[in-house]
Length: 90
Image (cartoon, rainbow, N blue to C red; front, side, top):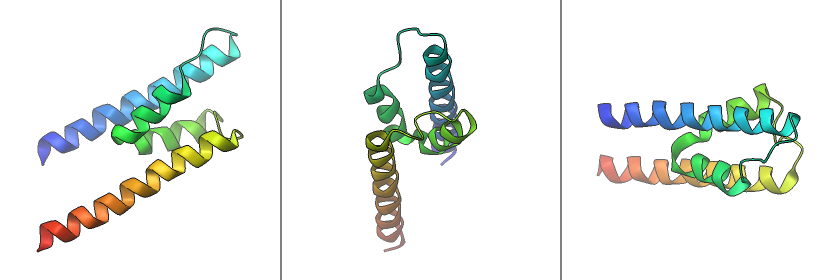
């Protein structure tokens, strides 16, 4: 359980920083981090970091296709967590 907690701290921090870095690159007309990589970080556990950075940095909050993909991942994670907890209880 401790390893999972450390993993989530690390991946959410990495996701948060990557979203912020992409926003910085966007403002400075530099090559961007791909949406695939941003969503991949989200999918492997960085959802909280992604949400925080999206709204703190005002990044990707107006791109409808990204928002749909991001929240689809978040909802799937909640569903998987629910069923994982249910399976663990049995």
